[in-house]
Image (cartoon, rainbow, N blue to C red; front, top):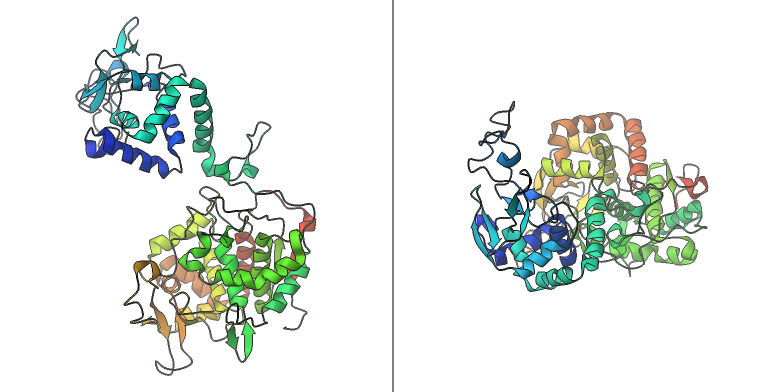
Length: 525
């Protein structure tokens, strides 16, 4: 079929050179390198055959005839009358055996293009090797190749691998074994999710991390240190938000923990804060993570003071929970034991967020983002209430302003504002992007609501993704529930936050690595 690419060639043209580009692109999107690509194609084509003996095709589709779809327009539609792809023939002389004959055939024959009995371009040797007929005893059938197969000898890098596998079956065995394991398990997450007594060693595509050390830092001691740091201005690192003369980094720490954790995808169990890959490029350089390198720098003295007992991944998670517990007089449970990737290992390559607040983002994109993360609508909307802390900065992200009038307090005013204020489009950086390249272009259009004129100090601000919650039928009812019941929102928020930061923890933590961060009986710093 045409699941990955057109095996007949680009746009159905039998062009092996052009097909090589399609092959590398298609398998590259599956994160396969050249050796994995060639091994999978040739190894997979060691078995079976294509089916296109019937020149009249497969017949009506399931949409056209749901009771008898694709019956085949020749004879019984089965056996020698089968039609699937329209190509016809096996690749090797022993299509029920594993060997390297596919590659031997490629390099040992001269092929010319022709039409299959099903009317599709395929390639045949001048004196094609013969395979047993799949349906007629003691009969034979000519082997063939597809244009995508021929591409492997029309690309110099692919050809080197073809020659290697043709001359060294053990190299094919090894490379196919690893590539097949990657193909069939890459969407299952890290090796810690594997079950059984015959688990292969951790593979690079699983982005393995160091094991949790036997001793980890006391979570509440770390939280106390973070809480103090929330209110200590370090302008040489990053100017703090300042409210009524008080320096405040709380919103920044919540954003750091959110950005680190929200890369998680339930679809393939990639992402999350375990590994703390947000410390490295490309993740730290994503536009949504602007200034988070400074947030890490603010936390660095705490990391140094606890040494190897405290991973960056745990520190980031604790910092977010600490800022929330401090601002909302709530208790947040958290477990430690995350570890850090020693160097960048590629684990963020496919995780760049599709949602950033940009004005052209749609409800469909937002809903997909929520679903891929593994959150319910109620959990996601509750977490959006975290925007009640801190503010946006036009010189960093291109957006400006606070969502609420009290950006050091975690409450449900975010939801009140969404529902009850009149919002207008606002361009925070109008005219400031005239001379910048696309790589440095900052988004500018957002929403603003001012009660005493456009220049008033009481203006509040929001992003496109905030307002989408108000105007979507499913999300708006949740917003209304949280606006009318702060206890409901806080309860859901805490549960959702605890879930968010632990989505990527697949081994049940020991009880002694978990704690509750609670400042309800402590005074503000």
